[in-house]
Amino acid sequence: MTATETAPKSAPKSAPQTAAPSRLANFPITFFATTMGLGGFTLALRAAAAPMGLGKIPFQVALAATLLVFVLVSLVYAAKAVRHGKDLAAEWHHPVRMAFFPTISVSILLLATAFLSESEPVALALWIIGTTLQGALTLAVISGWIGTRSFQHGHLNPAWFIPAVGNVIVPVAGAQLGFPEISWLFFSAGLIFWMVLLTLVFNRLVFHDPLAERLQPTMVIMVAPPAVAFLAWVRLTGGVDHFAHILLSLAYVFAAIIALQLPRILRLPFALSFWALSFPLASLTISSIMYGEMAKSHTHVLIGEVLLVALVALIVALIWRTVQGIVRNEICHPE
Image (cartoon, rainbow, N blue to C red):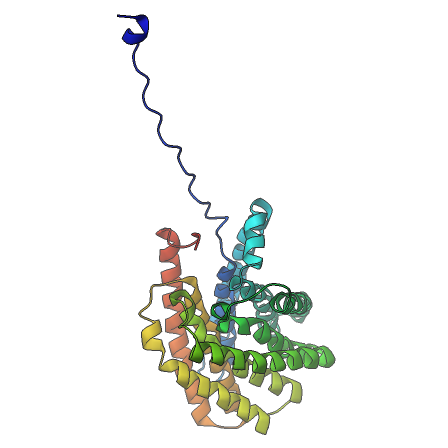
């Protein structure tokens, strides 16, 4: 027997292990939808403070929580930008996720609006940052849409409204801070792109394949543009007129249409896109209360109060389910 034959056989080489995907690399831009929803919820609490006798404490607690969540999400996403720049670039070039980048500027503008009653200098600083970023992102996103890339009908979804909604949020605080011209500019841009996108989105929903399950909650976003436009119009004109009434009525129409879809949407598996339910509901709540107070309509105030109760339940459920998703490692995975 040779030495070679008596030598112990080496263990077979195992297959190379594939590294688990980094959760930081897959931290999605859609996480900023949480701060949009919390920001809208904060403003809804402020709007309901007087008619419901809530006082300022619930609003201030919600504002602090929203600011904290926004800072945390921003820090994590900044870390992703530093350590996983290619993944961030991939999100920017993603035909669906690209529309979510303005959730950053919208969140800042919501914080600016909330700080109007707490500190005008802070509100002004946040408004300038948010407005500048919103303008840059709007131009960048729209340039991406009409650039050299080819989009398929399946890429279009109601999340494409987000850049338009961001523009009509600018006047809500801008008019009160003394920037009427800039506010009118952004309002006009938001209004025209809302009408264009509304036609495209309805064509997509009616004549093409249904939205993917993860995107179906974004249908609720259709409620937000007219509701936020109502708030902006009232701030710009200083009162409630026929056009303001039309905008609010349109928001109710879209809310009724979407309400019929909610039983099916709520049965879907949880995803961060479910946060898309929160901001539209908050904006409709605020608009209803504001119209009720300005037009002396107790019915509209009551509608706003009922919507606020639903909004509180929704925010609690979303926070609980998001925390569960983080603990169970259900979020921040490649799709």
